[in-house]
Length: 221
Image (spheres, rainbow, N blue to C red):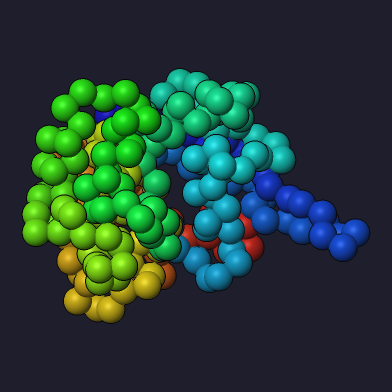
């Protein structure tokens, strides 16, 4: 099994009010191809910061992050944006759907940005896969929270990324919708042989990953 992602001795700190705040302190993590990993820890332990660094949405203070044999800490903002568009799917706790776009248009937008072909067909296929065949033309305001999250996940996964980063994807949902989203996400990862790094407070969801790690005070324990 090949290694898709290597987080090597990563530190993250920033200055606030004249004081240095240490967020991550020497994180090391390997993620193999087709492997799912859950990341747990208390609020403020650095879980979300780890996701932001792996995605290139934040910059490390020191250390390296190797994704597909490229050190993303050395990439430009444009190179990072291209990497996210084509290879990394990100699912947040908030949905970030465009409010005046239908479910279908929200998913199509990702494909349009990537200059894909057969855009509408691909968007409809993944929305159908996530149980939204009857919701193609609905605006986000016309969808339930669970449906909005499914659209957001479909939008992130429609390009079939090799790495999926999910930050509390069920955090805003009730137990029934949480289970539905969890099933869909885990099943997708298995069927498409994607890798998953999943941040969650939900023990049930975390236990469905192949491997669990815990972060405390900015360190893997």
